[in-house]
Image 1: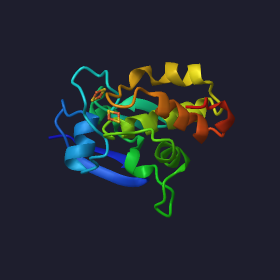
Image 2: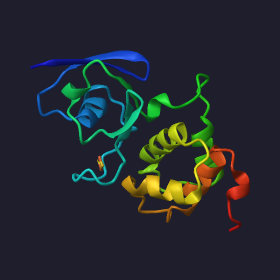
Image 3: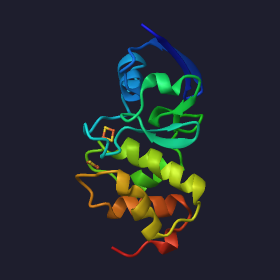
Image 4: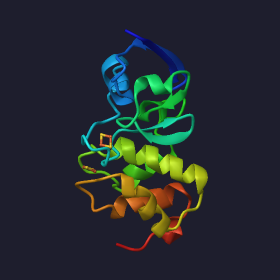
Length: 160
Ligand code: FES
Ligand code: FES
């Protein structure tokens, strides 16, 4: 069985995989990083979203072997060094950007990728960017509010 090596959340990670092993399977089943969720089998829901070399990637849409040597960040790597929630995570909590929480890891990873390339997105830009992330609970409104808050745009948040 081939072996794959990558850096995950700043630490080296190596494991045996089959050619067909998806990155999400490697993260969840081999590394036990179960914060990366699987919500569909059609690469539509975004629950599995991680960062690979800084790019937002659906971990169900790429083989583990394709990530050889890459830097991968999962939701487990997003907290601050002292273990506290980072700005985006805290904003989701403060603005009730989650209900069941199933989509939340993917939403946070997506939001982080968006804010990296567009630090002050408009509400429309946020909604456009989140098209690859499905939430069955929230209606998205509070997720958008959370991302606006995380980008320091509290004033852009419409009153309830
Ligand atoms: S599990 Fe990857 S997009 Fe749904
Ligand atoms: S909070 Fe339940 S799916 Fe989004």
